[in-house]
Length: 500
Picture 1: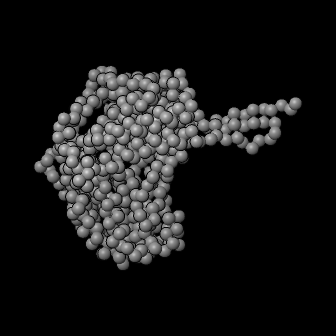
Picture 2: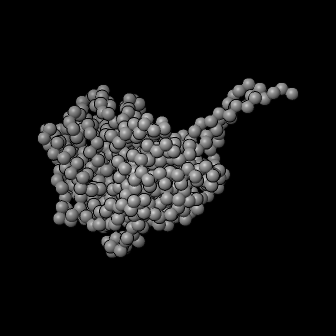
Picture 3: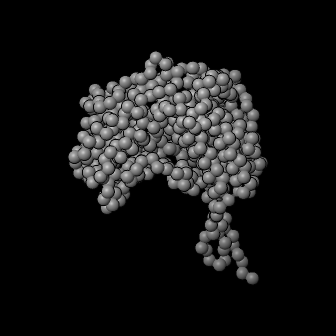
């Protein structure tokens, strides 16, 4: 039995009293007007505490703090090697607080504690540490000018970066923005989702403990239409890094137009296609992979492979394997280390997912497994892993992002039809191709309009590769060195060199 399995997470949770106050200029403070909102856990409805209801005045205070920190150079003027050492300490502190952070994440949004420990905390720390290690190894450029000139091409930090992140991977999504934004010398104001604010607030404290100067990393919790809108409209915010719904992403662009034309980098929704061809020999592995991917994190992943396009000749076998996998993903107590599927984030999301399931049935898809609310007696927000067969690409469940454990299986006859079906969607985040024919694998991967195409696997991932999508899945890329471009301005300094 591992150390984490010996921990009584239920007992730890009962003794937890998370601090919901904002972090501005390195200090915990209440909202300016004293307002709060109650935060409840989707596990069983328990009240976790009061959270500061940040609004325009609080965002303004955080932005002013961030601007002062940027302008006086307490962080932006530090040598990259100095920022590296501090960010490395920040990553170490995240790992040292892994039990506390994982428990906060699980209580906040319902994911199984085993994954909060093994995935979310290490991934957040790895992201911060990776950008720390990278930043003093990134070089600028010299243009190939004539002998009478020297043209320097340099990247400079933008200034104040507003970060707005969703509730499904609160720590990881924050780290994907914080790593490159802080490494390049910016100051940050982070607005976490009101549905999962606690780990962001704790991260800000750990950052100060690690040596990141006060004012450089601020966190203001609150609602999107209050704190989020105020941040996106603020005239002293130079860029917005947003992850969330396509609907809200459109608003981010609108807010930029209404304010100072700040840069907006949107990482939005997805309806990722998973294409299985008859020349792939191990149908069982493909089916088990898609089950594990769609049901991971309760299906609350923007890159979840929610559309399976499977060749008609192997579709029955594929469906049988997926159906047989469903029982092992039944929802259970997220605080139990053996649980693999937890609770949806709140009652609103539960209602949304159940509504999509109802739509699938009413539009003629065949319910193969699941389809009902689960564990209602706990007071929590659980839904069964759900599989539909006989889905048509025009059905609601095949077109719209559900953000729940709902899989749609669509049958096809030809390669050209599969590509057309996969691309006939507003999103273009990820996709997957399963084929033992190397020509087909490359051919189809090139034809798919998606930011990442997996071949004979799904969800294998690393901080070293970019993440983002085509079409309405957003713009720009998180992760990898490419993310540094989002948080820096490109400057040319042209020097004239006179002859002797």
